[in-house]
Image 1 (cartoon, one colour):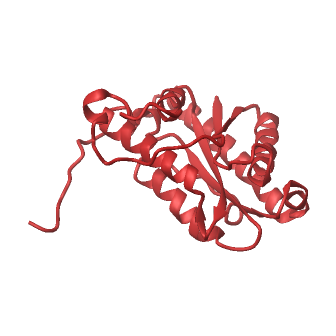
Image 2: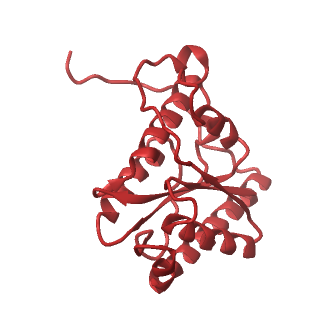
Length: 212
């Protein structure tokens, strides 16, 4: 079993990475492999809402790593998406990236790369805006039938740099609790699969427009 840890921060080894690294260490203790995916500092084009992914089987935009990321996701059993808080919300890079990743997966028929796989969001902030950013990130999961894994508190750490984040003892403890909860959920899913428990029945998507 393997969990993808998504670092949506432009800082490779900053506050968000520090929290994800604590999660990775704890997952390893629980016998779960993980990999940190770094979004980087390159330009990420926002979704054009063109729906071309329904015909192409991928996002029409090819000048960043979104399509490669979606394909990569089929090999993972769980996900944790991390972002710094910018202006009271998730950072612009992760928003543009995940908008396209999840929308193109939906329209291209690749939602099984995400559907029913446990996931969580974590955020880092100097001071505030954390709960709003978490609410924003959680919506990618709730619309994708992904069980959301929680910690003991809202999944956040505080600090202006990685050293300050390490001093947030409660926040770092919650990262460990979150990791153990993720590991437990994955093991339960594996046990259910081995016992023959069927996956939920899928239905075709129905869209209802309220203005006719």
